[in-house]
Amino acid sequence: MGSTQPRTFTGMLRESRRFFLFFSVAGLALRLLFYFRFPHITGDSLIYGDIAKNWLDHGVYGLTHAEGVLPTWIRLPGYPAFLALSFVLFGHEHYHAVLLLQIVIDLIGCYFVADLARRTLSNRAGKIAFALAALCPFTANYTVAPLAETLSIFFTAVALDSAVIGFMGFDAGRVRWRAWVWCGVALAVGILLRPDGGILLVAIGIFMLWRMWQVPGERKQLFWVGILVSAISVAPLVPWTIRNWRVFHQFEPLAPRYASDPDEFVPSGFDKWVRTWTADYASTEEIYWQVPGADVDVSLLPSRACDNEQECAETQAIFDDYAKSHFVGPELNARFERLANARIGRHPLRYYLWLPILRITDMWLRPRTEMLPLNSRWWEFADDTQDCVIATIWGIINLSFVLAAVMGVVKGPRPRYLALMMLFVVLRSAFLGTLENPEPRYTLECYPVVLVLGAAWMSGWGKRPLAGRSPNG
Image 1 (cartoon, rainbow, N blue to C red):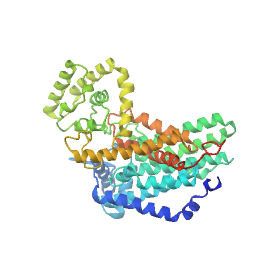
Image 2 (image 1 turned 45 degrees about the horizontal axis):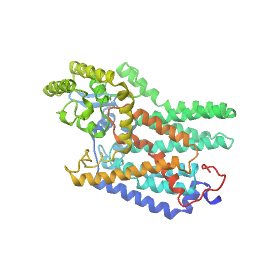
Image 3 (image 1 turned 45 degrees about the vertical axis):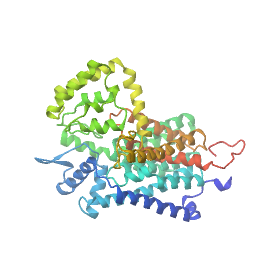
Image 4 (image 1 turned 90 degrees about the horizontal axis):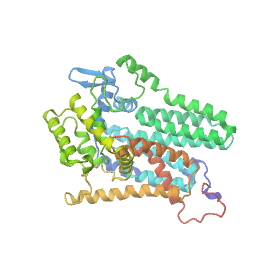
């Protein structure tokens, strides 16, 4: 078994330089294909860009309004800072440079995924993980959208790899402080990019507590490592929190859940009502994103949005009133909330359990076509056969990645520190189930784990396990 034991990463690169060169070029070609064919500027992209531009031009972390540039806190400063740096280097609002930078970052991230698989499994698994990461169309697709996903995935891979190096140090009887510092730095950047980046910090913390309980002799070292990682991870939020207190006179260490500034009215009743029935991305596009500001086709509501004829009539009446102004004010919001409370009272399990499970399932298994010019109702073949066929193929590819990861857990060989990886995936998925907008992109931060688990299963193909040997090797 000596040939399968992990050596140094640079040694693996030298030994298989042609392999890594080939898949690096293939991965670059895939991303450039998306770059030339499907670059995608979203509304969120323009918000990030406006903040970055105002930060540079006016020294104000804010958004452009009719009355001028006003401070905002609707986005954490991580991604606007990345855009601002790119604008300084390559020109204001030069989004093509941003996309090319993201392509490079994503390709570098493939090497961290490979190292994670190598350390927790074998050189063979590391190479397979690199190939899967380089050719993964879903992570590649998001490199050509000015959004925080590419950087979030990258720093998730770095944090996990660093944490594994740190835990392996404990297994060898030493504390690898440098690895834990890098883990904290990666977590800090991940949190600055997206508030839910803190979920990985929670997962690592819980795993540390479990290890402290399992290995009493490591408690003191783990305690101080936990303090170090936590301090580094949250340190950048201190100036951000102070800034928010000084500007808005409110305590906000992250960003508001509904991306609203303090003077904005939040239609929380409408959001609550949406959570009583939404379970798929199509409803997010057709209903949730249309309010406020656009017409809503009530016929597109799924049957589960109404429990009886009286409720359907009340829902229609609310949207008829909404159509007069395309705005949800306090009165209309209160009507949505009453409707939501009645639905929750009738079916609490549906609201608190079954619908979150359906939203999680949709985010993991739906064809990841939201960044492609395809119909979100991919299953309606009669309306657009070509789009539906492409989306179905896309869905099969996504299902293949997910099933390979499941097989890596069920059949193995299972990687070391599998509990840490699965804890992160479970915690993040559970959090995503609470959202009213089930967007598949939110699960992409879990893809470093998906790729490693898929590589674990594939690395066992054609190999016969030795008697008495544990699956962790």
